[in-house]
Amino acid sequence: MTTVFEFDITTLAGDPLPLAAFTDKVLLVVNVASQCGFTPQYTGLEQLWRQYREQGLVVLGFPCDQFGHQEPGDAAAIAQFCSVNYGVSFPLSAKIKVNGADADPLWRWLKREKRGVLGIAAIKWNFSKFLVGRDGRVRARYAPTVRPESIEADIRAALAG
Image (tube, rainbow, N blue to C red; front, side, top):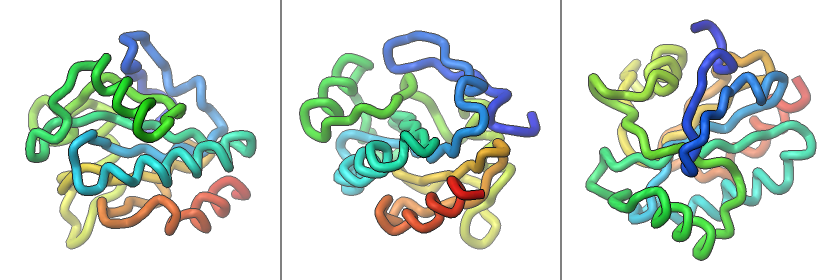
């Protein structure tokens, strides 16, 4: 695979979603969890989505239970938590794995495209973020500690470019 638009995902509702539907959009891809210290980042992610979606930003959340069992719920529980607590309206995928032999193919590709600190490919924790440009290539990778609001300038640049 050479661009993100060649992948298909499954939504939290269980429906197929080809990422080709977002061709020419900027994607912010994030592994998320409901019971993580970084969970309040949902607020910033939702704000970015609402502010920039008309300009071409798509925020995609990927629930993941690989770190400290912080996403134990099923699809219905995840959807309810995100809606009630954070008003999440951006697309969420079915629960996935981001590391290991069973890692989601999209996430394997993302990690190959942009390694983390010290060249490490593995995702370290929930709320790791990848910014993908309109060309479908990874522009940047952000650690879980990086708040969504702090990458707004990068998102604007990607939308402009």
